[in-house]
Image 1 (cartoon, rainbow over the protein chains, first blue to last red):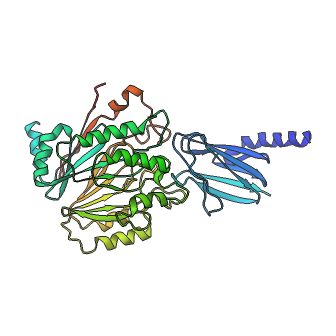
Image 2: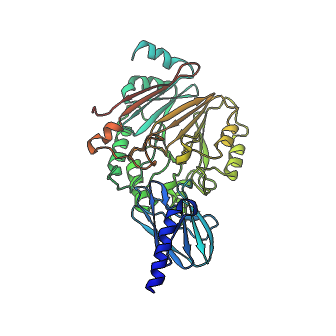
Image 3: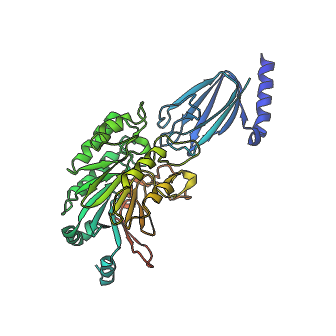
Length: 111
Length: 316
């Protein structure tokens, strides 16, 4: 257990170095993203299937999270409001803010 | 008023606008050419009203906003409406160019209606993106403001007043990833039909929340298909486009089209490129109304440049 955990940590640390190219790689379980200055942070993230992603709005203006093909849509999130979605299926999920559609993000789910 | 300024204002086609307290714009129609005026120019406004008519624009009241940039937007909206009520010449009606509320909640709409109602003016609305985030994505707005004007689609409509054709457009609904504001094909088809048969000499006023010209693409301050709407009004001799959304005054003139954005009654936003994001701009509490002070924008057609004069309501 701890070996697996440690190697995942090491892998995650390595992924952080190359996240500019591949986006961040997160561990399975729960991963937290923020919305800050009209930007999803990180805007691209890679996670194992089964990961629950939690977005928190840290702006003074509401934002929403809308998957481009309609797979999920959050209500408007006021300051410090959260929204989560669990990604069970592998694939690429692009999303944007329904209020400010120039804000875009992507979740890549590995099998 | 200086004689030279008076000459300019009398010039046919001149558009002057003064805005007080960041709260509203008083527009005057004379000979089909809209001008705006202010509390400071009361006598002039009266003279204009004798031959034309006036209407008002307020915007971005954001009732429900609680952040430090203005924890009490209800108070500043009420101040704005008090200014409207104190006008010596009652405007014919008022436009609200959206973001009435912050989160489309029923009590936010109720509070906004209560404050705006005190102006005792017929008020015509278009939604901002903050007004259609109820669970049914705009149903609450349409039920409250759309029925009276027989709004189509997500809330667009038109009406005529004193020979001027007003068109309320919605560019905040059904937005697409990566884009800015959008009108959509259905609304553009309706607009083409709405304008059909109108004489080219009919003054046109288009009003919508997000600017119908690109102010800052990376902040989404523009409308992707605005060019198609503007193409439909190209044949008209006088077109005025009134928007909100960016919480600051911007104006430009392109041929027969004058574009103008109004200030918010709630909080300022940064100038494009001057901040990391377009979020609310915090100013010291005792400076809020100072920052929102009076701005005069005088647009002269022809070769004369825009003349913009800021005069604070409360001197710093």
